[in-house]
Length: 294
Length: 144
Image 1 (cartoon, rainbow over the protein chains, first blue to last red):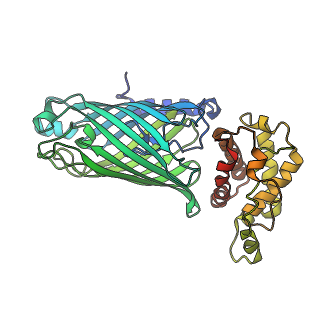
Image 2: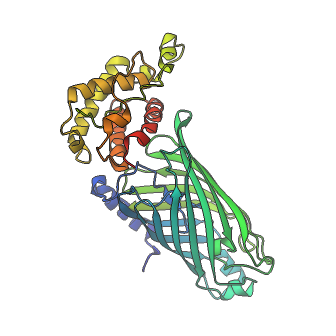
Image 3: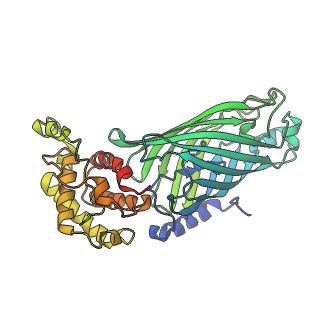
């Protein structure tokens, strides 16, 4: 599956986006949920914000419809880059299955340490079940349980710096709720996700380490304000474990603008602060994600 | 029984709040921002036109008394937005019983209403305040 967009990326993205927007929204089979309520796709392939999986399931299908999404995301901190792409499909707004490929470009680290490889690839197979509630219509938040099984596919270097395993499984419980007219008469989305994980830098540097081998319980959260039905702004925060002795790992955060021109397309632009990664501090930079729904 | 599907009829019991709302108004109410009585009539007329053309839901209105539906919607939007009206129609459960209305159909009507209000340049804040009042009816209208 050739999911990582290569070099003339921006042109291809622009063409793909234009093509998607040319298709009328009515052409989607699963379009029963309200605009923007499917969220975007986070970089591990689950429906969510940019860094954090939410309780919402991918696509716009209701309990009588099936549908999904495809996404491509790029983050560039100057020293490193991360490309992620994948697909997700949701059955009856109950179960979401997802697959994502990630390519972590080592950039500056490769130059500094004369590393034999310039990138680490990884893959994530995900599943999410909506336990109950509805993002918009129930008093209780929408509540979902999710699993992300991850494999790091270039494990020689992570192993050499102390990572224990090339694969790991994150499990999480997410609660999301949209409060109508809650702030400045605008709709406000709250999300909180509790995750159990042993991943180093989300799994891009393997799982477990010399400092801590086992699981950590981390909290991730997002807040988004819907300026109107098509535009949202928000922030996210993602706690992370710190398992490896050779380099510190920081929590991640971002601030984003999301645009939902129709139910076919979503565009998220963000500024992400990923802290210190593999000894290089202050990893910050732009984040861009495109999502198509079907 | 002459049912009136998708009539966003109100919770007939709990609406004493509107009396207070129209007594004295120092600030602009949702009702005012919807354009008062004339504005709401315009919104409802445009909404009905849109529903009739919306193939996701128009079949649900095939046997509907549109004249009555129109007056009930006007009453309801007026009451829910804080205007000087009292909703006099059937309850949500009564008016939608046996229709097998699903969430996709409910949302289709919500989208039509948003489109109509946006086209009529109703401020997003006023739209959200009205939708916030109508959203709880999902549980009474949609067949579980």
